[in-house]
Each structure stands twice: as structure tokens, then as C-alpha cells.
Amino acid sequence: MKKINRNTQLVSAGRKKAYTQGVVNPVVQRASTVVFDSVAELKEAAKKRGDKTLFYGRRGTTTHFALQEAIAELEGGEGCALYPSGAAAISNALLSFVKTGDHILMVDTAYEPTRDFCDKILAGLGIETTYYPPGIGAGISALIKDNTRVLFLESPGSITMEIQDVPAMVAKANERGVMTMLDNTWGNGLHYRPLEHGVDISIQAATKYIVGHSDVMMGVAVSNKKYWPTLRENSYLLGQCTSADDAYLALRGLRTMAVRLKQHEQAAIDVATWLETHPLVDHVRHPAFETCPGHEFFKRDFDGSNGLFSFVMKAGNQQAIDVFLDSLQHFKMGFSWGGYESLVTANLTMKGLRSETGWTQGPVIRLHIGLEDVADLLADLDQALAIYEQHL
Ligand SMILES: *Cc1c(COP(=O)(O)O)cnc(C)c1O
Image (tube, rainbow, N blue to C red; front, side, top):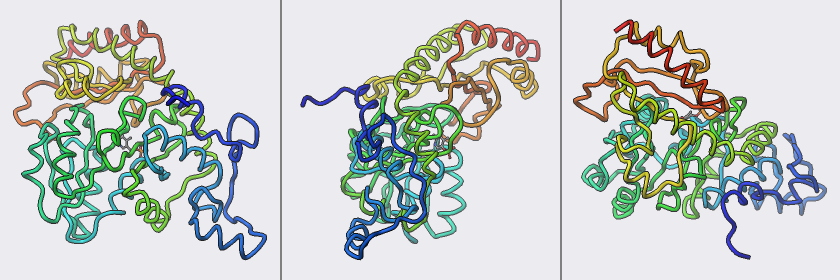
């Protein structure tokens, strides 16, 4: 059969009769104990160590297998490990491959808890982290040391949205035998598939677009063939598991991800286009716009964008930000993103973001554009920006 297209894949992946028992969706199979009828059956299951074989609840049930299979297929990997959050997926993927005395290279614009994990947990284990600027490209080779074990990327970067030149960096890492991992939460597997660009392990906070409804925490890590046995085994050893109900909801979210993303993408482009010409706005940081660092790599490597982007004000102060946030009606303040609702966060200064020295512009505001009507969102931003201006 001809290779199927992405939308079809999102609908069909992981829908085996063994998981669905003849209906459309997988059965929610909740379990701790798995019971065996014979010694031979138990031995057979033990040999497969839970790889899509029932063994023990912690190693997953058919509900989990359906989700794992679907996500591995989407990202083009050998297997997918599930974790109770995106943060757990990142920390466990790293812990599965580093030991005392190792060195890792971490992008400067990494999601803040990723950074904290390196500084607080890995540092305590005697694992050193060097932060590199997101635009370093092939220049990464100068930072690789003999004990460098992992090159960790996140593209686009958190808040400031820089797109990385992944193939150039992976090539340098490969030359020195350094494995690569990428936080692909923004790229979601539909718009960006890191393994196709040579990355070894792609990690996502499924909490965001896969779940899509702000009601489940989940993380996934998809590995290529080389690293899958170690990732799977070490995730078991670290005791990682998720509930069958959450796996069911994540898979249900995945089925409609393409159509939701299409709406998020267009609405965000409309809002960013409007913001770009607003007199208070310096520039937008949306990977699909030329003003975003690494836009050329976005055009080369990505199949689309989504609802999450930032914009930079020309000027501002804390009071102006506070009244702006308080006066928004449709944009709610809160962490996370990827659900159907619009969200807003603001950073007064980018001094905390180490990637860009000489940052002279004003505050950075990050929006998640939900599924509301764009006209309502623009009216909301318009009135809130007018109030912002009164406080400059
Ligand atoms: C939200 C997020 C995470 C963490 O996911 P949780 O499920 O909230 O733990 C990791 N990386 C990125 C880029 C995120 O946006």
C-alpha cells in the first residue's frame, strides 16, 4: 500500500482490534495485576518485558499500547515511552542516558523547569551543563567535550521562539558520538518530526496539543531504534507510568489534533499580523514571520505553525503589564497552553533570557490563540493595549 498521508495516519495509527476489541476507540484497561494461566505464559510475557505485551500494570495495558503506537508512528520512531508529565519525560529521558562525570549541552532558551532540572538535580549528581545560544548552529562543535553525552535542543525556544538549525547541530554531535534530544512540544509531531532530521529522541509535553483540552498531564518520548531499548528499560526502572484513563484521553485528543491545529494556526497568524502593525509593538516572535530568529529554518524544516507565539513591546513597565493582563477578557492568565482556550503571559524584561545580550526592547508578551473567534480576540487585545498605553 502507498505510504499514507499525515491526517489519515492521525486517524488510523494504533487502532488495532487487539486494543479496540472491535469498536472505534481502545478499551480503557485499568490494571495493576496481570494474571497468567500458566508458567509458560508468564515466562513468555517476562521475556518481552512489557513491550506491547501485558506483564504488569506499571508497564502499560492495551490502552497505553494504542497511544504509544500512534505517537511512535506520528514521530517516525521505534517506540514511545509515556510519562506522567512533560517535565517527567524530559528529566527521565536525560537520566536514562547520563551518569556522574558526564557533560550535557542545553539550549539557553530551554523551558524553565528543564533548566532547573539541570541546575538542581543533574548538578547534584555531578553532571555538568553548558548552556549554548539557540542560534549557534554548527558552532556547537566548539562546545563539545570528550565527556559530552547529550546535546539537548528545544525549537522554537521557550518564550523568545528562536528556531534552531537542527541538521547542522546534529551533524556535529554525530561526528563526536554525542546523542541528541529535542523538546518537540511546539512542533507536535505533525508540523515537525525531529527524528527525520537526525535527532535521536523527540520529547513532547502531550499535556499541550496532543491532549488539547487542558485536562490531562502527560509526557511522551519517542526514540529511534538505537536508543529505544535503553530508554524503555530505564523508564521502567525509574518507575514511570500513566493511568489508562489519561492515555485514553490523550489518544482521543490526538485524533482531532490536525483539525484543531489548522484553526489555531490560522487564528494565530491573523492575530500576529494585526499585532505586527500596532504602534506599541516592536515586533512579533512567531516562527512563520521574518522577524523571528531562525525563520529560515522554520521555512526549511517545518510543515506549519500553531497557536503559540510572542510579541515584543517597544516600551513598558510592570504597572502597564499588570493593567494590561487584568483588563483582558478572553485571554486568561495561566500556565500551560495547547488547549482550546486563549492564554496570556508576560515577561517584563528579557534579561533573564540569556540567549540575547543587548536586548533593548520592552516586555515580551506570549499568547496562546485558542479556538475563539479572531474578531473577539482582536477587540480584546485592542482595548487592553489602549489601557497599557495609558500607563506608559
Ligand atoms: C509545558 C511544557 C513542558 C512541560 O510539560 P508538563 O506536561 O507541563 O510537565 C515541557 N516543554 C515545553 C516546551 C512546554 O511548553
